[in-house]
Amino acid sequence: MQKSLNRVQDAFLRLVRNRAYSHAYNALKQMHPADLAQLLPYLQKREQQWFAESLLKTRKLAGVVSEIDENLVLDFLNLIPGEEFVTALQEINADDAADLITLLPEDRRQVILERLSGPQKKAVGKLLGYAPNTAGGIMSPDFVSLPQTLTAGEAIEKLRARAITGSEEIYNIYICDAEDQLVGVVSFKDLVLSPVGKTLGDIMEHDPVAVRPHANQEFVADLIARYNLLSLPVIDENHRLVGRITVDDAIDVLKEEATEDIYHLGNLGQEDHISTPVLTSTKQRVLWLLINLATAILAAASIAIFSDTISKFVILAALMPIVSGMGGNAGTQSLTVVVRGLALGEVDWSLALKVVWKELSVGLLNGIILGIVIGVLTFIWYHNLALALVMTLAMVGNLIIAALAGAFIPLLLRKMHQDPALASSIFVTTATDVGGFVLFLGLATVFIQLIIK
Image (cartoon, rainbow, N blue to C red):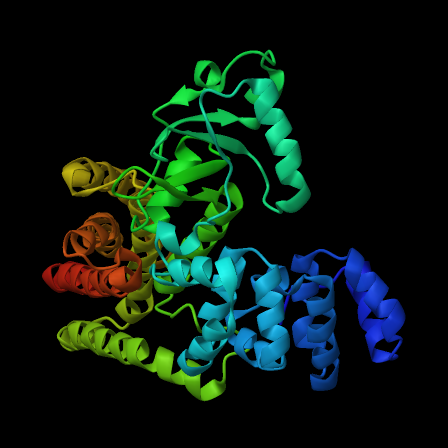
């Protein structure tokens, strides 16, 4: 279910449930699309029908749909008759229209696209030609471009005239030459503060940061974050301006990528949500659980090798989970740091040695500290110096294994062009479990005569 609703949302729901639709409609007009999107899971089917129709009338459909859980979107869009849906698509920004059409099944998508007309059909069709996770897939074809020969005063007048018919937010004015090639950019702030007689060519920033339509969306978002941009121009192979990506698009991408990494760390697909059908969630999770089962069997087998040692001193069975558990926690810490660095572009294979050495050093120091602590506690509990020494050495060794696995495994997966967040946790956990058991029980076997004295 969605996070808790605020007072305005609660009041809106009460109006809808009491069928006070005229008051609810007035409230809906004042509410933000993000707040409206949270309400969908709370609405009954007949209420969703009214909700969809009201969003169409208020031209909030695109904004609300972009915030709705992906598992609920398709059923919601199916409530909207085709003719009304086409009319709504004609009236909204082309990039929003393309996003809505992308959510539809292939057969309905083609029908809706064919029924669009004029410039909107051309613009939407062009956007749909790009992969969804590229700059072209998230860009807007609405932008302001002006020649560099215009003065600041003339440019402001053109912007005033454009504001009457245009709906896009203006962060930057892109400066193009006679061939529509991008040559510079002027921020809205610089334009307004410049003397009215100064030309755009005098105040523009030359050779602005730009991307090609097929650039990866994560790369695009990183550029916007790195250079603190409000918008990023998209240019074709001839350096002609074809669109722009705004900072809100970058935030959505970063949110999406962060969500994907979190899900992958849990060995889940992004389509697995609270509202996902039981069988679908089961199908998506069971493969990784089977892999986890196989690694658990491997860990159990490593224990079985030392069954004779455990039978001679049963207390070992109570202590060995401490070593493996601490190794798992330490491995997760290293893994999280490295996966984050890979996701943000701070780490790559060329820095592998530096990263592994740093994590190894941290693992060694933490291992010594924790090893001494658990060694002292073991001696206090059991008054057995040999057992305390085994616990200390096993703890130090397993935290070294954890650091090496947590740092090296995600780097290796990235080198192999695999997602480091997807499978790293399984391999790291296996390394620390097996390593912890083998180290602890192996050392106990070596020193068993001293331990049982």
